[in-house]
Image 1 (cartoon, chains in turn blue, orange):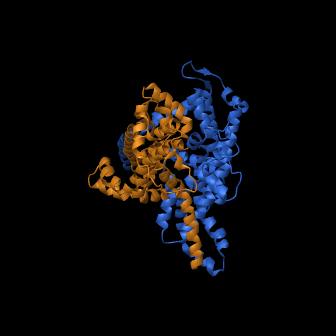
Image 2 (cartoon, rainbow over the protein chains, first blue to last red; image 1 turned 180 degrees about the horizontal axis):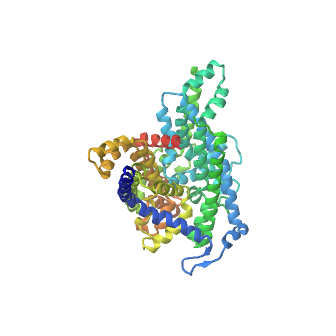
Image 3 (tube, rainbow over the protein chains, first blue to last red; image 1 turned 90 degrees about the vertical axis):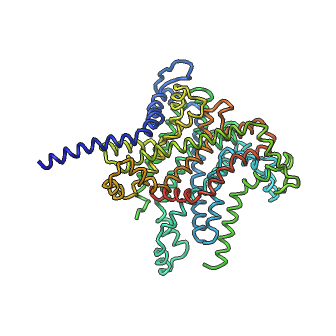
Length: 302
Length: 272
């Protein structure tokens, strides 16, 4: 009798709770449903059609995907995106960790220096890419002028040269984001108990050993987070490419998102663009899943 | 640590800091030069005859005021709406027990991993269908309901002990009362973090406005400076002045609220 009464009461409670919960959820859920959930489903359907807005949609099966293998521009932009990731992700991690370690050793001026390093991250990519483009100017820019005074006779052509355009974009992108990851690493470093270092000191460990056997292992959760954020972000590189090189010279700095944007909103190939966007999604997903699978092998949670 | 070691660390960090701010100082300096002076080398940081009128010129050359108004409108409305709707939803996901809670929340988190580039084409179709393409409201609709805000606030609300809300319930407060009188005041740091992130994102966003805003009266600052750059490609000094104007508001907001910024980043980094 008692249990019956209880279940009835909790049933009523559930009903009331559910009503309240839905009232709270509703304002966000409507928008989320229309502008996130539905588009995900539609995006999947679009992968299998040919469509340009003006003519009726035509189902083409897997053609959008098979076409990619023969599409040189797609292959180049895929390669460039991988190159961007392979260089910019480790570079950002090493530099931001190095800065965080240095910053963690000092007391005076930490706030000021942190602000200096952080400012590029919050400023507009468009404005700052325009500035960098001027700094990179092969004939007149201050970077090459500086290199010439150092004795480099033939400084790089940066964004104007096919061999250098990706590297120029990478340098600028790393510069822009290291402050953000430095702050994350700094928080991670401050979470390491200081008695570990004291114990190591008593055991006679040198600076390298402390770094190798205390700092790095204790930082693995942070490194895990940072690496996932960086990998996902690097595959979505777009604005700096659009502003600085428009994917050029030639196709030398074309990347996936720039190609998707062009296919969709310049050439109106919405089906093909969606298919490439899904390839991007699967790459990002595969990397994330792979990282999480490997997580227990190298990440220590204490 | 020895003093020499400390000095070396300070020197390294200062050299790094100089590299970080170099482009900004160069931009500021170039913005008050003549076009010929911009690329002079060695760099003369303060020109003999500062061209302050460059800053007046840019407002005349291009409709910067409209771009500014549009950007401010977008930033305020998107940030306000997303805080309002995300905090309500986050309350449901953290403080109300209902059967589908975990399933629905999983749906929210699952979509965070989907890149914007995947859904931007269908979003464009939907917006066009409801007749809002080339309208600022298009961007409001696609940016104000992102699952990220719900996720961030939900994580914070979870850390507020349930005893607090239960005690308030016994005192006769209903869920809306608990939400507005107990949870929201306690969640101020998290709300500030979300607000700053949204502000910076909307202010600096380029791809969204590029897709939706085609007529000049609807353009944002980011589109404005791009237009400026293509139209007056050799007016280097003016382009730099326009860039300064685009960058300064965010830097000011950041300098005042950086505490929340840094704490928010540290929080998201440690919790995950």
